[in-house]
Length: 412
Image 1 (cartoon, rainbow, N blue to C red):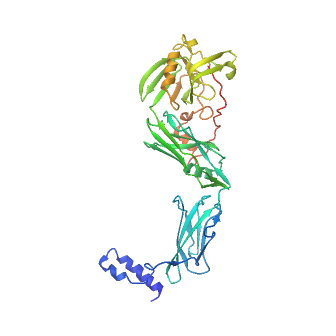
Image 2 (cartoon, rainbow, N blue to C red):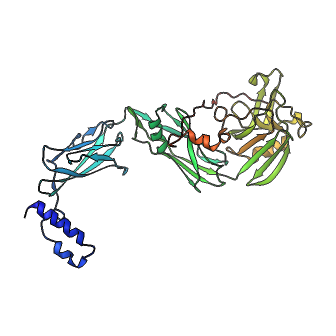
Image 3 (cartoon, rainbow, N blue to C red):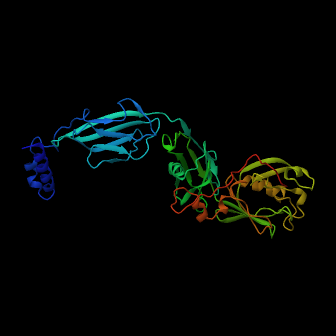
């Protein structure tokens, strides 16, 4: 009986194993392909790489049989991280070709299963390395690891611009944000080199956040592959929210939903109206020198200001303003900042942390912009936020100018 006949008999017996287990020993004949020791198929198949050699990761991996010497039945290719390479096998089994890019500078193991003209199984295992990338795309996550407020977005700064939508999808899928508890969140492409991540709603208090990049070695574009990047760990603290009503001249501060202080304030006077909207605390400075020249004001001033909590890069603060105590709670007389007594400013400074929320309502000022003057991310509604994701099917790119941290123009 030929090998082919034995193979058909074995296949027929295999169908009987489950319903007729008592007869399974009748199929245990010696020598059929399913039980045969695979032969060495090294002489039967070729790869576009030699064992121990390096191949170009920008080219597909190809495996083929020599002439008409049998056929390929299966190919498994994995890198050292356990990532599989998808591929397609031709209908006649003579050629397999990868359909996903190889990683650069990676070690691969390829296991090829074959079958000769008599149906006998063969095996070949090949190990090889891919060439290092010509150019690496690295990611710098922000902010620094630590404890932040519920409004703190995660930022990702890329070392090179990524414009192509398919390349953006590759990058975005490799930027991993894990949190406990889990949240509904997503990345937003601010521009070609900057992404922000935020939940749909503020982070839950006491959330643990871990951010990492899985881009290392992955092909992003022509001659551009992902490089290694340092991970990020954040702890979200209590939910601290300060809402300033410019109309009633009062700031209400809450911790985890409970009001803990109501503070008389003064905000921007006409022509210097404080921006409306949600802002995120960027920095805390115990002393700042504020001058009229820094904001181009015709009203001259040059003041040393204490307990200054920054909410925009252009110089909007919550700070001590002992010179305006008589107007606090009654009128808006500042040049854009939120002023309060020294005692209240010190209490506010000591109570809040980076990432906490400061919201202004009922001001005559414009709305806080999203990305060019600090973290105005929460002023973008969720539907629009998701449209600037590369992996949302119905989304489309929405660009913006990145925040320019060099524009430190204090307002008083």
